[in-house]
Image (cartoon, rainbow, N blue to C red; front, top):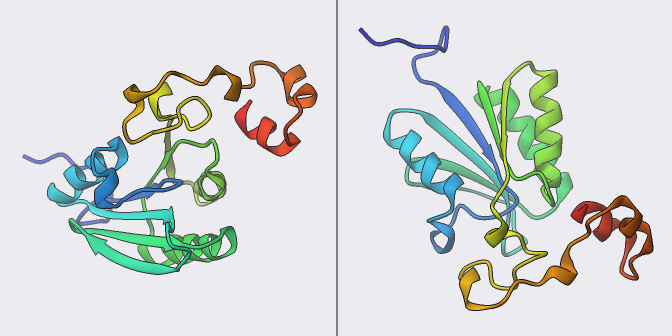
Length: 167
């Protein structure tokens, strides 16, 4: 007997929201691996990411529908379309830092009363700490890129918004 936690649907629907990725170059990132595994096990999987080439597109890879947006405005419209047409039951936001569309998706998940899951990447994929995220063990860590306290948000010589996002 199969147990289902999703009422009134034949297959569970999940939306992955990531700041980038869902391409073959980043195929070993945890969100892409998880999405492929769920799609392989009869889940309806949709992903939304920022486009690498500044183009809006909708692709299908590994049975995952991938919406790519060139800026936050188009990303917002993609999100509205996904929420209204696909009606995902679970919203999985992969890393909130520098993921503007992820923050909007989190708010929409709460407004639409959907289940929300968020995760953060490990230190070896933090672009403030590592210069080469594809192969992070090649170089030393960059501790100057980190902001440790709220006082440093205002005192560092670089831009305030970058410091605030990194806090």
